Image (tube, rainbow, N blue to C red):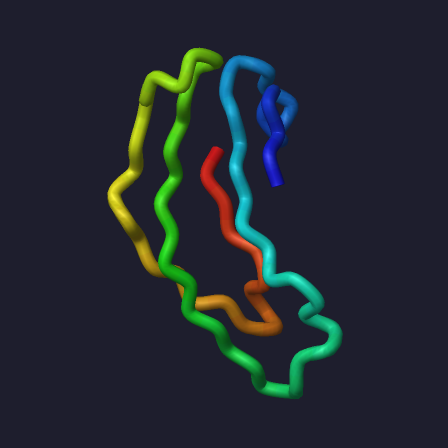
Length: 68
């Protein structure tokens, strides 16, 4: 999910979140590890920001993760 004006009541930053899709259909005790990288481009396609690849563990208790 993307919140162009942030998600905590601040409108001077961008918030990005990763969510596990269809988590209700996964078996009890499920865990998933995801590798990801965030890349920000302007309207011309010029790269403005790149976060190095990271890894995050998702489970029933923590099915979303984000950067604000």
